[in-house]
Image: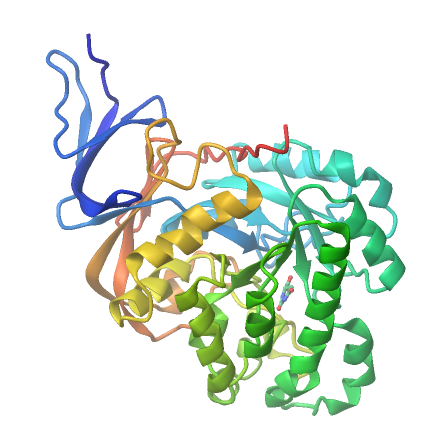
Length: 445
Ligand code: DOR
């Protein structure tokens, strides 16, 4: 007796561990149950067939760095709008950041986020827990809570007031972590020293203030502590070629994230064109750094891509520099921007999948996700590699309604988002209610 199927994805080009080729994929109860060159509904059994001819079927794209601002900052974004943007952009799972208000720094705040997310989030979710000087002793419990993506530590100030910059506290935090922990790596002391470098009204001074040394001092220190304690650290949004080259030699305990922003926008042009709307931390830098980051994409140094979706309202971005807020939207544009890079020959589609599915699965120890394999969750990002579209502000579902990529025409577009067997987005339309659920990790409950 064979088994019945709920859904068969038919005739798509599956990008998988056994190569890239035409495969059918059968789904039952939200899981992948068969992958083969031809799957038919079993006789007498109904199965919904989804025609994927001409499309690429990728494992669900995981964005392991987004800020969805709920609770407390919901004039910028909330868990519903942020996750709508995610699924419209082909993202099936997000890891959300703790610099909300209140901060996500204890079990109650995390449980509150999870409860709010259920029934309101369209994508699956996990939440980082912010590391502070006060919750160091609780790290072992905080890392293991339901939906915990692990700890996130800000070594330099950015949006919100999560900051741990002294050596003793950082040493203690790193000695206590047992999962991989994520770090915003910029050196606070040098940032304070160099505040005078900022020129009022001139965002081109943003990367001069937050210079290469700000990033390097911090990343060297982080790797030194990780190696001392033999703990896994994840260095978020790398902005410099210097860090890529340093981390290439120090991969034993450190994993590496880069963003589409740092791979696509270039200083000084982006600041001249977009002004403070191109301002983020760490900053977008010049073409020379960008080329060295791309080398890290090509040679495998980089482990994951995250969007660092960090929405602020137009009004907040419009304040004169340096009073303008740092951060840009990105969760909805990650897939189209990177598929355009694939079509331009800058990375392969297989490497894209490695960075957005296999990479997060491996780095964070995700269960049941990250690969198109029998037994895994049926999460798919289905893309049309030939479709040309222009990214515009009016397509952006984020509450703040703007993107730094407004007006950019790309080739390659997400046309369907499937999460645990459900078609959540088809051709730019979100279908059904919010049914996002908590991701599961080997090292958490
Ligand atoms: O530019 C940034 N904005 N970088 C961060 O690390 C935080 C983020 C935000 O939350 O706005």
